[in-house]
Length: 153
Image 1 (cartoon, helix red, strand yellow):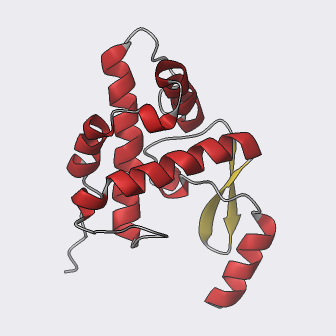
Image 2: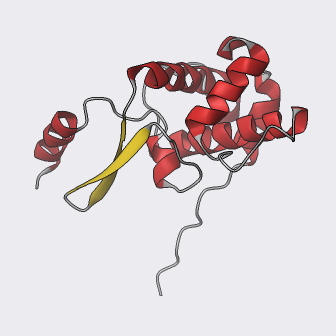
């Protein structure tokens, strides 16, 4: 399957692409509002809810904007290189979880890796995503290390 055909088929079967697809596929987190699917030899993640997708998309845009310093970029308007996107998504989710754990450890439950549940908890705590203390979240984005490259022998 050529790449153009793959992308068009992907768009057909996945009308609402999960905003945190890379983090979910990296097994850093999960989402109760998502479903996984396979296309060719790749795994994709679809969002099952327009409302939750809007919150996730808003958080991802905010994370990208706040991560400009971390990424050493003056402007982030659109998709980033894979490694940068992984750092933002995985580090951002981990940072948000750690932030909420630090404020209310009793409220973080077994679903702490559920992106939707974590965003809903953040909305209860801060009323809106713009009010999140991104300086604390960015510490996890900065510290996030992806998988190490394998050395070929």
